[in-house]
Length: 325
Image 1: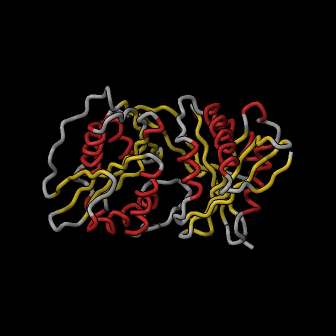
Image 2: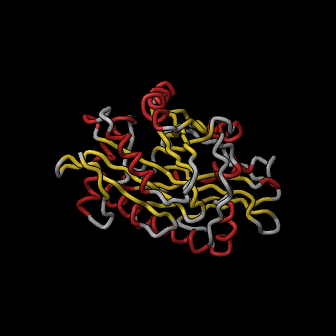
Image 3: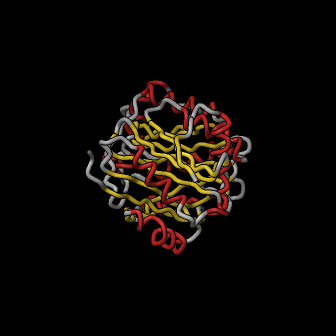
């Protein structure tokens, strides 16, 4: 086996990588749906502030494993590490070799490596941690529960007005005048929600970056549904976003939800989520909606449960700190 760089501009290599990623995910995550090779490749290639370094594990000319180190311009000292191996070749050290190679490909300023894992049960995540990630020096930083809603079948509650606020939904972008505020909220989602030991920092999204993300989703065959609550002064107080993909059979994911601190206590989180789901339901073909919530985020878990979401799998995020140099 040989590990070497994977050329993101090589269409054939990207199709092979997507095949490996899909096989590994379908093996580990029953019911998983991929975005499609073209959409996934567009994501790897996007000029969106993320820098991706791809690696392949080769058996002669056959790609048997695929890894990546991904950093963002706003957080250069943190690298996300990914590794996928064909199911029939797992437990042979290929994944560990890909993780180490991806770490070595990361910039010298990186002080923390972060990885995530999804499994059907908590026990399965614990087994993965003991047998794979912990020997590589990773420790669990936080756990999340992935929940799903069958939007075609669920009976959603009636929408109620929230005194002092106007709730509106928008397809493929909020009005231009709201984009800067929404970008600021997007940058707060991970920082303000419970996140265990991760200590995420605020990372605002500019209006230009916001529009570029919408354009990328559209190029990938996806539609974004965003809902905002605006107060009497016209300021955005709460936001949520759902992205649905035609290539995934109408499956959708919630990108994030946040109510600004000064506006909490008015049930705005539930209001924007409910309006968002009602708008998404009106779109042709939107079916199952997934989202993940930190296990310590009792407020959002309560809202999801009220709306009819049920647990389908579990997620854990692991990290390993190093001395940059």
